[in-house]
Length: 224
Image (cartoon, rainbow, N blue to C red):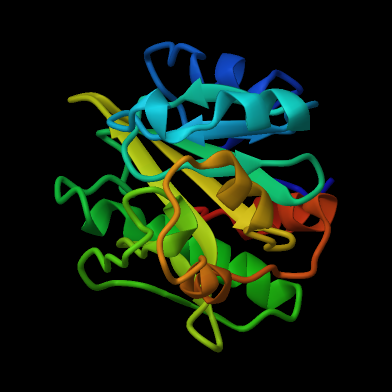
C-alpha cells in the first residue's frame, strides 16, 4: 500500500451497496477515504429516482439488489470487479472545500485524472455545466457533470456525486473497469427507440483492475 499524506486516513468496507450508502458520517470529519468493495451486484438509484424504473423480475433473475443513495443523479450498476468505488470525506474548514456545489467537485476529478495518468490512461476533467442526454435521467454514466472524468474520445470514465451538509461533504466516485450497458438496459423498464446505442458510446472502461485503480487514487491524494 502506498504511503499517504499525513492528513488522510483510509477505511475499507466489504458491505453491500445499500449498507455502504447508509453509513453515517461521524463528526468531526477528518480527511477520509472510504474504499468500498461490495460483495454482490446492485443497482444503485439516485435519490430522486422511482423504483418503478426497475424491472423487479429481471433484478431477481440476475441476482441484483436494488438500493438507493442519498445523492442525486441516475442509476449506477455496481458489479464486483467491474467498477472501482471510492468515497472522499472532508469538512468545511478543509482547503479543498468550495461553497460552489459544482466547482467543489473539480478537485475530485483532478485526483482521478492524476490517478489514471499514473496507470497510463489519458483523461480530462469536465469543468462545464451538466450535460444531459436522452438517457441521463435514467443512467448516471449517460450524462456528464462537473468534476467527472472523460477519456480521449469523450467517453465517461468516472462518475462523481456529492452529499453535503453545512459542515462536511461526502464525494462518491465510481470508475469503470469495463463498460457493458446491456445489463443495466435489461434492468430498466423504460427503453427508448434508439435501442440504447448512444448509451453504449457514452461511457468506457479504463481496462485497469479495481486493485490498481484503488492504489493509484491513494498514491495521488492531495497533500495540501
